[in-house]
Amino acid sequence: MTNAVLMDLAVGLASGAVKVVDLSVTLSPDTPILELPEEFGWGKSWPFSKEEISRYDDRGPAWYWNNIKCGEHTGTHFDAPVHWVTGQDLPDNATDTLPPERFIGPAVVIDAVAEADNDPDFLMSLDFLKSWESENGTIPDGAWVLYRTDWSKKGSKEAYLNKDETGGHTPGWDPETVAFLAQERNIIGVGVETVGTDAGQAAGQDPMFPCHNLMHGANKCGLASLRNLDQLPTTGAILIAAPLKIEQGSGSPCRVIALVPQG
Image (cartoon, rainbow, N blue to C red):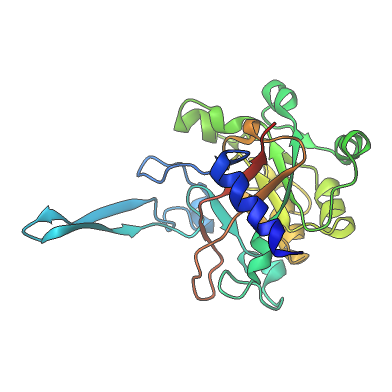
């Protein structure tokens, strides 16, 4: 790579020839978070909250700032390999030790909007993925694989989580598909629009929570609660997803953006 490549990018950003698309939700007390059964820690992960320290007043006449509080896996967030038991012994597996080049890569967008609209428990099969590759090419090395469902467009927290007495009902992955991506494709990881990278009924899959189990066991990462995937091309965008550098962090909220060529 020459200096001209970076200069061309800078010129493209300044001119609007490269569009920056925000793929992140806004953090607020109403931001949905993953709700686990009580025996697995539900009630222990803090929803987002903030406390005002000062706002140009007698607490601080010239400055505004807040204390914030939330769990690592809140809102649009990054899952590091150490997040799951299968990734616990891998080297450089936490948010502070992952090489930063693993935060940036080409984005491929797999559209399953119609399928998820027809069946909230839709699981992307390996045949579905291979059909996508036959039309769009093999998933490139170092890519983020983004699973588009338009689930982020749900109008309320209740519709987004879509829970009943049997748990959540949101789309996800067939275990065979995850195994293929984890073992046969050299990707950074996967990203979804739902509250977690697995399906709402993933506790009943084999293995349990296959995306977490297999992806993190293969030293790959995850992104959850993405939005605006409908603004990305099927291929050709660059995704940037940098977690906070938390010591031995299992993940963190992050501002995920995509660079999209225009014209």
